[in-house]
Length: 76
Image 1 (cartoon, rainbow, N blue to C red):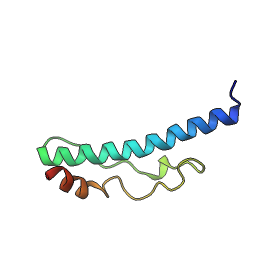
Image 2: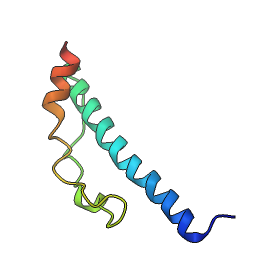
Image 3: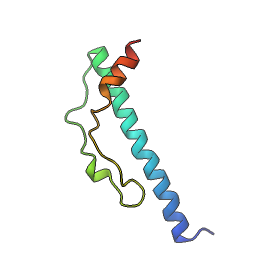
């Protein structure tokens, strides 16, 4: 049976991966919405509340930072 620390580490790893995936999905969907001229998100989510001191300490910037590159990538 896993210890509480092992369970916490596993949950933390899942959380860190989820933050990365959320940001990637937001970027792609925002870019594609713009390219399709479809309705999109309102203001982007704040990233600071997504930080976790152990598992996601370096979350920074804005969710919109990568949208121009994604638009360019999807336009090819």
